[in-house]
Each structure stands twice: as C-alpha cells, then as structure tokens.
Length: 291
Ligand code: SAM
Image 1 (cartoon, protein in one colour):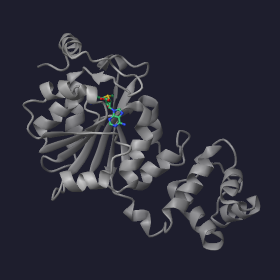
Image 2 (tube, helix red, strand yellow; image 1 turned 45 degrees about the vertical axis):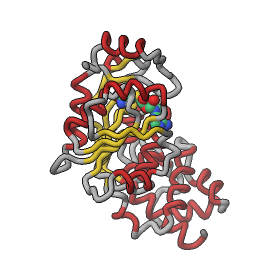
Image 3 (cartoon, helix red, strand yellow; image 1 turned 45 degrees about the horizontal axis):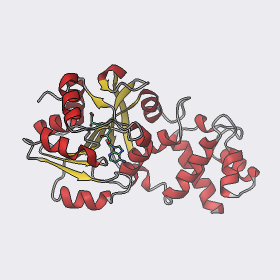
C-alpha cells in the first residue's frame, strides 16, 4: 500500500471512518523523499542499524520506512482511532511495536528499559505534533534517555529557535537547554504541501546529536537552579537580565549586577548577549554566595 498517495490515504481513512484531529497536530506526511531523508539522516551518525523511538505514528508512513531500515521501532501514539488503520498498514512490519499513550505522560525511562533492553544504538525519529515540540524535546534531553540522536520535523520557526547559537538574536531559553545537552543542526526545509491536511506553516527537519550535557555537569552542580536563571533571563528577553533574574531568585538587583560584573559581563546585559559558558559562569557566581 502506498502511504504517500493521497488517493490511497483518503480511501483508507474513509474506510475506517477516521477524521483528522487538529488539536493532536495530525498532519500526515505525503512526500516519500522526506520520509526517506528523515530515516537516513537519523541513522547517519550510527555505524549499524539502530533501534528507533518514534513519537506519533499517524497512518504509519514514517514508521514503515524506519521499520525497513532499522532493527526495531517502538512508537508512542496517543490516538486509539488509528489502531485499526495501523494494524492494516503495518501488518507486514514485524519489528514495529506501537505503545498507546501520551508521550508527555508515559514513563519514558521505564519504556526504554523494557523495550530496548541491551541495546546501545537507539535514535529518535519523528514528525512531531507541533503543540508539544519543545516540551517533548526537553523531556527526551533532560531525562538523559540513552539516545544517540534526535531527528525531528518541527515548524520552521521552532527549528530556527532550537538550533540558534546561544548569544544570538534568535536564541531562547530552549536553545540554551538544547545546546547544553546536544549539538543541534538544521538539516532541510519541508514545504506545507508535503502533508495532508496541509498546515498553515512550513516545517524543517533538525537533528540533535546528544551528548547528555556531561561536559558541563562538573560546572553546574544544581541544574534546576541553572535553568531557573536561564528561563528568568529570557522571560523578558529585550530587557536587562538583572531585573527578571533578581525577581526569580528573590535577590537584590544590585547583587545580580555585581555577579555580572565579576564575570566580566556588562551589568546591563540582556539574555541574548550571553554565551552558554557565560551563563554557567554567572550561575556559579550567584550560586556560590547566595542560594
Ligand atoms: N508520523 C506520522 C507522519 O509523519 O505522517 C504522523 C505525524 S503527525 C504530525 C503527529 C502524530 O502524533 C499524530 O499521529 C498524533 O495523533 C500523534 N500525537 C499527538 N499528540 C501526541 C502525544 N501527546 N503522544 C503521542 N502521540 C501524539
């Protein structure tokens, strides 16, 4: 069955009485070359066929491609209405397992331990539902799941933010977190016409090479506090970061300015002026004396 043919998809969905859910971000891929590219880019830094964790199977178009080229695919899908459809479309994919549930609620560490026991090469590939793009990526990174790479389709604007260097105009708190745990790279754009139904924005595929933040761990003893400072700094990104950070930590503004100064940073610096290393220096100065 050709899962990128609009005629085949419409016939399949009609036969099962399936209606797209906008709130679940159901825009299914109909561009075969994009599926191929996501699957091959995900494997690119891996020596041999890895296991894959997928989020959101839809009608199984990417799942099928991953099944063809990878050792095992475990996919979490929230919408049970897709169950009879996937039973049909993935009938010949014996290395695929669908786990029914919400990826934001499932215990992922336990799921990985159960489904990928003994496996070392695990990657994540997905055409992500847009309403949970950043939270789901942050979950995968913060929980230090044993993933080598995360290759995901996201909205074009989200790709820009997620891959922005820290200390650049497009950087946000999520860019700092992504760089803390991984090396992000934007791979290619995907036009809105590559989906059914077509979304109102274009998309892009990004790949995060995960290193888990080990290189910074020695300098960041309290990651919760570090990211509180980062998030507060970006909460008013066009303003001097001393204001929101002092409010968040309940410290005098002058104390934060003194910390900036001690780190050779401008006391009127904004969040987007700081590199990741400078954020870490600032955190250490604040943490040493006050928290
Ligand atoms: N992989 C398919 C494709 O490329 O055509 C479908 C991608 S579609 C953009 C996103 C999929 O994620 C949908 O099938 C949707 O039902 C599912 N989904 C949405 N929210 C989810 C959640 N919280 N947990 C798991 N799956 C979710």
